[in-house]
Image 1: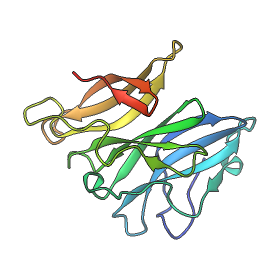
Image 2: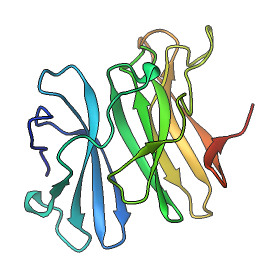
Image 3: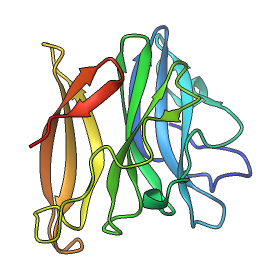
Length: 183
């Protein structure tokens, strides 16, 4: 239903996530630069009362909304997972390609287009050597339950992708945003 345009991307959209934002729906996606080397994120919007067909979507911005900038993100940001908390949108995203290691970061936005990272380090890093997720903690999905509890689902493995496991952690919320309880 959507294909990104502009010289900054290769014209593909993967890892889609949608969130209702007032009277519109925001569609977050991963794409790559024209050389297919750097993966980054974009966003499109459609009216909430539409059929969500191809003609309903409008790409927002003239470039990526988030691209790899931090050392741990390497050449890839993908798998955006967005939720609303009060007046803020929060995005959990995967940084680095699979098993490089991939880790999960977090950013915040008031308008759904301009994003600010919450930290220079991963929100949810890969595990220590020998841990079940030593090769990665990646490809997040955020779920807010009816009781307002928030869960972050993610994939991990310890063997560079020969196996895959799914897990979840509960995200807690404080004055400065989301955090994970220490184990």
